[in-house]
Length: 344
Image 1 (cartoon, rainbow, N blue to C red):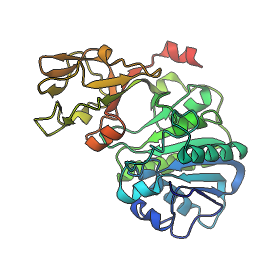
Image 2: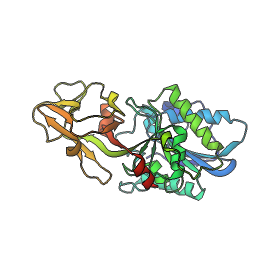
Image 3: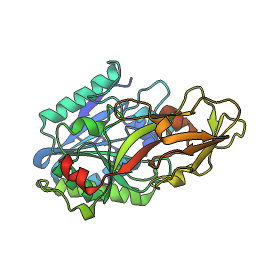
């Protein structure tokens, strides 16, 4: 594990460096504290996944905007997986996922979880105001905010990013989930890396948060929110060979499957095709309690892998390496007005 450092100024060169060259400035993760007019800091985490680079571009743009003048609010920036960013990967094969190591995680204690605990404790001591974790998707997805809580201030924060938001309490050990214990906390999903609009959207949100004096205690109007709930994380069984292109694989996934993201899938929707003998189901779908609910949502008819029950997928990726490192997708359902009103 690389060394973890804390700094009280921006390292020379940081404002212009590309993610894959960041290792030349930083040997590993870094927490940078910058003083602003309001002392309670905004916390922004970036590059928890090394191939998700929008956060770096957004932070660079914000810091350039305020070069030579005070920030409206103190700002703490956590730069995560520098070594994975060097190679343009989510994480290196020997590493833990940097978004699964935060307090509340299910990992054995290690240097990565100790680092995340140190960052958490430091920001708790500083009285963190708001937490923002900036991410990208590898598949086709709209921009949306993920939130672990449905309290009024968290919803107000999320709706500042956009009307589309997902309530999710799994997987465990996410940065946003941990910081939700300290302050309003959101994850920004900013589309694919390298898209200018993703960076612009994140810059606008971060800058708006820097200017907030406080966050309203009232719930946003229901008509301003398109709110969904994550119900399961879907993975491919370890023993199943899968592919989007190899017709001899155990599971041949449907081409351009990511176009189904945020689409209501009906029973009978085909997701892929099976070759020869296969497990009862080639997929596992873990809910928030860790139960495999795949038999509730998927079925096999002939050689077709199909939806058995309606659901809305998100974060379907076409990157087979990321599917193995993380998951194929998440399944969601809409939150209607009555449950939302009860949730607060």
